[in-house]
Length: 177
Image (cartoon, rainbow, N blue to C red; front, side):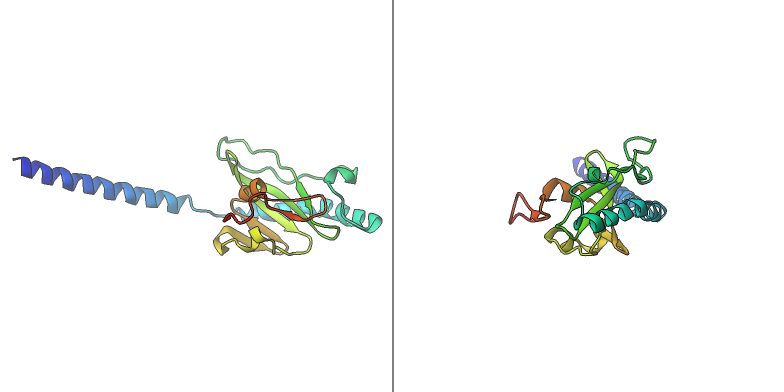
């Protein structure tokens, strides 16, 4: 009797575990990363105004500004984006990093989950050659002209930054990305 019960219990446990793993795989397949192409296209168009202001600033000053506050002109913000924690969209805004005198990075959040987010990232020079972005797997970004839709961009902003001179700064050199 005990041997039959153990065998039945073991088979039931294996069956439940298999069912759980199948459901988990189905969940990951259904919720896999899929960029919002419509939102991304809107952001590219909406960025035209702020990018033109940055170009005008560069022509008049000889370099890009240190921050968007130096533009002294109101400009259109990006389309609001969806969050996973609430049904209402989050207010969109531009984030800006100057990369030396001749380059900059402009980005807008896409989707968020607590402190993790994806972003639409623009580089004036089209160069995504710094250590972090050049080491990204093809499955973590989608090229859209000078833009990249980058999954998990929050990892970049938590770990790295460009200093006031536009130099790449990594507070943890040698640590894997």
